[in-house]
Length: 501
Image 1 (tube, helix red, strand yellow):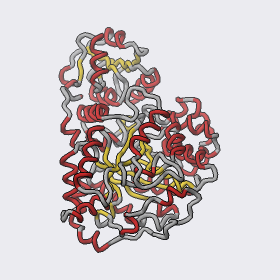
Image 2: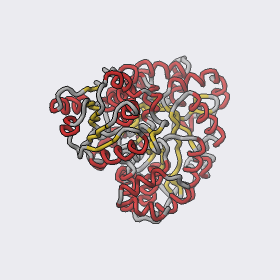
Image 3: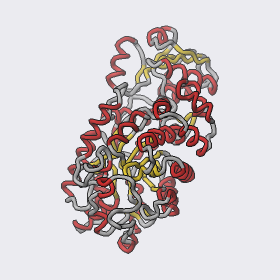
Image 4: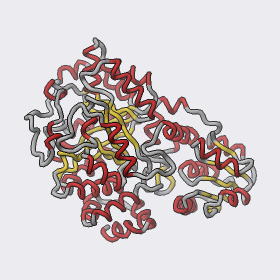
C-alpha cells in the first residue's frame, strides 16, 4: 500500500489502480501519514479528478438558529435556494423555531421544503427525531472555537445533554423528517472519544439505517483528533455505517501537533476511502479550510449569522464567534484557493440544474451506487439530488433510452467522456459496433475508453479530443453535456449532432 500510494502522488495511472483496490483503512492512514504535506496535497487533488472523485467545489449553508423567527428562516432558505446551495438543516433549531410559533417541527421542515428545491441536508437528528437541547447548548457562543486548541473538554462545562421528553413527544414525526430530506448526517465522534459531544454510536447506526431505508444519502461526521488513531476509528466506523460522504471537523477538535499537515492528510485519506467520492468539512479554521481545499476538499458547510456553522468554518481563534456571517467569507476563501474549470467556484444554481438533468436523462436507477466495472456512475450527488424538487423541475429533451431507440447505423460518437457517456455507452452495448469518445480533457477521454473497453462489447476508441474528427467518423453524434452554454458551443461546430437538452 505504501508503494502504490507513493506512486499515486505523481502518476494518475497508479492513482487509478489504487482507486480500484480493496483498501484497509489502517494501511491507507499509515501510508498517507508518511507523505510530506505537499505530497498528500497532490494525492488528494489527484483523487478529486474524474472518475476517482467528485471534482465539484460547493458550499452547504446553515440557514437556521433557535432564536430566529419564521420570516428570517424562510428568507435565509430562499437566498440559499437562489444561489443553488444545499441547505443544512439543524433539526433542533427547526424544532425550536416551531415551538416558538406554536407549530410542529415537521411543519417548519415542510414549509422550507415547499419553498425551495435544492437538497436539504438533515443534521442533529436522533432515534426519536429532531434532537432537542437545553438553553446552555442552543445559546452557546462557540467558546471552544473562539478559544482554540488544545481542546480537552467543553470550556463551559456543558455536555451533549438532551431534552428527551420533548424528542419522544414528537416521535410520530420522525419518518416525515427523513422523507423531506435529501441526505442525513450522523456523527461518529462518540467512537473517537467524544462521548460528551455527540449521540452514542448505536443511535448513529439506527439513523443511518433508517436513512438508507428511504434511499437517502448518508454523511458521517468525524473529528481530525490526533490526526492518526482517531482518523482510523472515524473512517472505520463511517464505512461500517455505510456512509456515502465523509465530513471532517477540525478547529478545536484538531488536536494534532501539526494541525495543518494533519488536516491536509486527513482530506487526502478521506478522498481515497470515501465511497461516494465527496469530502466535506463542517468545522475548520481559515488555515484548515485553505489547506483542505488545496488537498481536494469538495464542500464547506457554512452559515448565516446566528447559525453555528457561520463561525465554525473560515475564521480563527479569537475571531470565530457566534453571529459571524460565514457564507461570504467561505466563498472568498474558495475562490482564492481553487482555480475555476468547467464549473464555477463554488458551484451555483446552473451547475446544480445541469447535474439534475444528467441524472434525469440517465435515470436514478442507473447511477451511484451502481457501477460500470470498478467505478460508480456518478458520486453521492447522483443519489441525493433525485430526492430534491429541482430534479422534478428540470426538463430534458431525451433520455439515454430515447437516444438508443432513435439511433441507426453501426457507429456513434459521444462528445464528452464523463458519466452520461458511460451510461449511454452501456445502453448501446451490443447494438453498435463502434463507439468513439471525445473529451476536451485527454485524461478523461483515455480513462473512459479504457473503462468502457473492459466492460462493453463494441470497439471503444478515443478521438484525441477532436470533436469534429469523432463526428466525421461516426454514423451518429451525441453531445452528452447538460451545461447549456457548452452544448450550444459544441453544437455550432457539429451539424446534426443530437443533444439531451
